[in-house]
Length: 327
Image 1 (tube, helix red, strand yellow):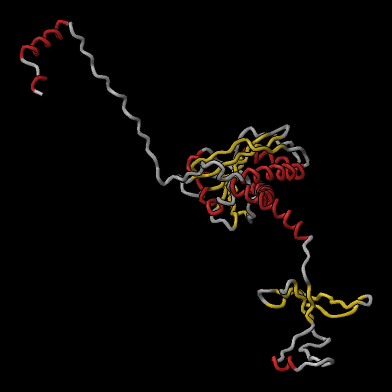
Image 2 (image 1 turned 135 degrees about the horizontal axis):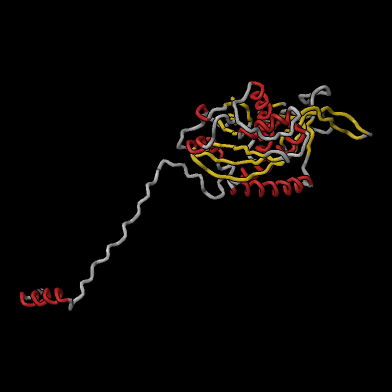
C-alpha cells in the first residue's frame, strides 16, 4: 500500500496540472433520486382478473330484462346498454353527484349491507314525464323532486330491482328489497369513504332524452360470495352441468332390482331344520298392511298388493324418507 501513496512533489504536480487545464476534472454524476410511492396495506385488492366474471352475465341479463320493462312501462322503444365498469372508492364516487340525484338504496339478502343505484336528475325528470304521457324532453333547470315525483321514482326503482333480482339468478340467487330513497349525496352512506365500490354504468336513451344509471356494489358486500362469482367457478359449474346431463342419461337406462317385501318372520335355526313340505310360515303382516318396495335392497316405497290383468302387482302409495323414516 505504501508504494501507492503519492509523494508531496507528485501531489503538487497534479494540482498544478489541474489548475492549468492539462487534466480535465470529471464531476461525478449524481444518480436520480428513486421515486417512492406509498402503499396502503389495508386497501382492498379487487382488480384480480376473473374474480367477478359472473357479474358480466348478471349485467347482460339485466340489460335485456330492464329494456323490455321500460319499453312496456312507457309504451315506447327505450335502449339500455352498459357503457362502463370500474372500481372506485366510495368517497370519490359520491362527490361526483349533485343535489338532487335519485339515490336508490337497497338490500341484497342474504348478503350483509346495502347497495346503491343512482339515477341522474335529468333522467329522473325525463322518465317521470314519460309516465305522464310526455316525450321526456330534458328540463331547462334542475330543481328538487316533489313528493309525487319521489313516488314515481319509487315505482321505477321497484321495477329496476325486480329485473335485477331476476338477473342475479344466473349467478347467485338473492332477494332484493328497497330500503329508502335519497336525493342529497351527503345523506347517502354505504361503506367507509376509503372502501371500494364496483361501479357499472347503464345508459338509457330514446329519441328525445338520454341519461345514466349507476349501479354500485360494495366489495365488502360481495366478498362472502366472490368464489361463486369467479371465472374458475363458472367453468366448474358448466362442466358439472354438462356431465350431469350425460350421467342422468346413462342412469336412465340402468336396470335395478325391485323386490316387494310381503312380510317378515323370525325362527330359530332348530325350527328351520325341522321344516317339512306343506308347512305354513306365519308372517308379521296381513293383506291390510303396506308392502315395502326395496330397490337394490334399500327400502324406497310403500305400496298395497293387488292383481293387474292376472299378474300380481303392488301399487305405490308413498315414499320412504331415509332420514325420517316414512315420508
